[in-house]
Structure formats: structure tokens, C-alpha cells
Length: 218
Image 1: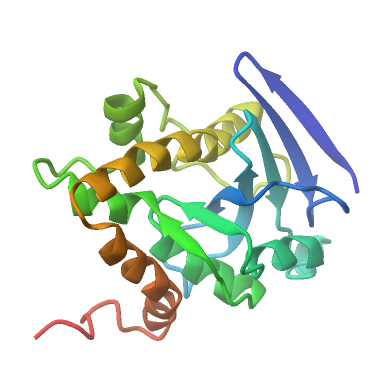
Image 2 (image 1 turned 90 degrees about the vertical axis):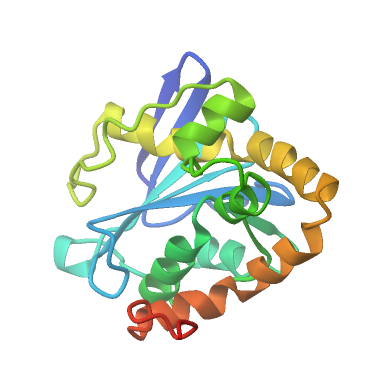
């Protein structure tokens, strides 16, 4: 499977086209993020899936539709990982990622955790729950959001795009460790887990159009 590797000062980024390579073991907890053509999961195309085992290495899978010469949802290794109940999937704002992965790949996600939900449950003294803010305040790490609005559907992604995409998964393990400690301290870990378990259903509600109005609103 053709791909490329980008070496950075504090990270190694592997780009894979169409699927993860055979035999890749990303461990019991995998940080995952996605890049899409927009923020409407029922409308916008999935372009990239980033994964990391928390070891300073990111694997980015470029999803190319058949209309552009790719394989689309034919990515058995990636789908097997996403549906593996024994492998924890760690996201930031999992609600969006779970929805887009279900729509694009048809996967039934299992064992999901979300650092954004965790932050909102324990950091009630602030409204800053974005990944950039959390990395700065909890980890002392600055991440760039400069490439956030770039064209992720381009056939050839730039090193700057790949570096941005990787930064969204490289710190999630350390971030979760901090937030899990706060959830335990505040007695909200069980409540957080209940929220995480509901995320696949929440994603499906969004895909059906129940995002606005929210089905749970009055």
C-alpha cells in the first residue's frame, strides 16, 4: 500500500492510503480523530482518519472515494479496529467523529471515550474545553490550529496538513490521564462512562437530523 513517512522533531507521521497496513498493533487504547470536507456528518465527506497509540507516532489513513480512483469504505483493517470492543477508542468531541465514521464506513463503534465530555464534566469553572486549550492548560503543550480549515479532500496532503492532523491525536493519551484523575477526584467517572456509552446513539440521532432541534430539548 503506497504511503509516506514524515519525521518531525517530536513525532513520526505515517500516511497510508485506503487502509491501515496488515499486522499493525496500536495497543489497548487508540487515540482517533478525523478530517472531513466540513462539519455536517450527513453531508460532508470523510477524508482522513488519524490514529495513535500514544507513543509519539501517528498513522493517518487517507480515505479516497471510488470516483477519484480510491477504495472508499473498503478499509477492512481500519474498520476492524474501530469495531473492536476490546480496544478503547479515545476521541476529542467523539460525537462528530463517531457519526462521520458510522456514515462513511458503516462501523458500529464500541468502547469510546471523549476528552471533551470529560472536560465539561469536571472543568465547570471555565468554558474553555477545546483541544488547544486543554493541551495548553493541562499538559503545557501548544498545538497549532492553522490548518483546521484547509482542503482535506485534496489528493496530495501537505506536510503542514499532516502535522496538524497528527497533533490532534498525539496528546490524547496524556490528556485523558489528567482528565480521568479529575473525574475520579470529583466522583463523576461513572457518569462520564454513561455518557461515553451513549455516544454511538447520539451520532446516529445527528445523522437522522435530530441535532437541531435536539430530541432531548423541551
